Length: 505
Image (cartoon, rainbow, N blue to C red; front, side):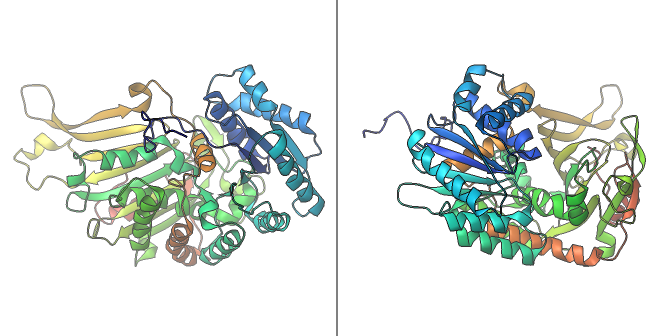
């Protein structure tokens, strides 16, 4: 075949369409599949990014046929799709939608699934390529993986690929994480395992790399000589919903601190990779995670909290212990804040404050670099009473963009310096809306692009940070805070002890 002289294979601006393949989703009737995965598949099809020869295969306990499953998939996709609904697109996709009923410990059901996948090679021309999405509780991973190994569905043979997508949490501590990693790696090769962290699929998270490494403006100040502290916040205004069974065993630190927030820390603190490739980016992130230091005085610099009854958006909401399915004496945290260090030449001495919580005043995720104050201000004290610290804020959600906060003179006949902001908003700058995180990540799985997926060593390095915190907190009661507040008072005191305060998003 003669290559197209006008196309550079390295050019990421050109649409990349995967090879013919199938996507097999275990737990297809669950919330994640209905609210995220099925709409993402439709949106990819609507944008012309799925191959012509594509099949979607669902596996769950429900006693359904292809028709009932196709109707569920249609309703789920139509309800949550990002792109406009086009019936002709769905009709083409629906012709390739199939369902296999069975439980995870049913050998016959997995034999039927393997047979259905083999049959699709001829009927849909998928070439034997398949990605398996484990949208199931982590406790079920061993059963499903062993079934896939037994039936040969996980085998890579010449001319075809098989990949697996594993949802978080990746274990519940370092030991269980290593066990899970060893199990997955015994069934699939390391290059074919995609550990999905949906935060890494968000446009603004990826823009963090562009902001840092495509501009000369920020690099000279992106270090401990200029940065006083870094604050990474992930606030949710919702409670636990119907996830009491999961959350009681997990808590805020294991749920989001271990993965989402430490990944954001790694992207913020990493050095420039040699090239923009999966291997090089993961290498630099791993260096950061291995350089993270935990506070010596965890009593002062590691705080956890639990929300109580309060008011949020004008409504009275229950406390965590009043939520359905929660132990009335539960000591599970719904808020966690910690001061970490990154022991590298660039960041030595700079505190990284991480906090995450539920039932906080608003939903927001952001990374804020707070810069040191000017060493000398030639103005009178009264001129700068309203002047704070310079800040560079990367907003991950919901108003994706970047804010630069700096001092400016207030118009008038006297000298008064006050903070002002320069804002960049994705929604205003670009006409094309950002794809959903799962949309981007699913496409990357089918393409085999692992840039945005953590590898084994990253997961284990993250647990090495969280495990000592969990050991310290074990047997202690979390600090209470009212729903609608920004966490317990102890979290404010943690920063106040060092002469700092949390930024109000």
